[in-house]
Length: 76
View (tube, one colour):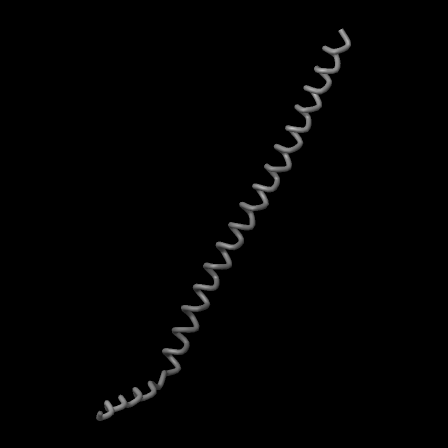
């Protein structure tokens, strides 16, 4: 069996300073977009937590009213 020839490695590509700066600028832009999305998501999460707390307090208030109403009905 003859061995298949091993392909030669591709020559290393030299990047120019302009190409490196362009890539850095693109990565910086992507990072900034991701950070902005995180800020938005963080705000939405905080809003959701506030709503949960408000709803929980309302449920407790209504349960208290029902308990009080049931207690006054039992007294009659």
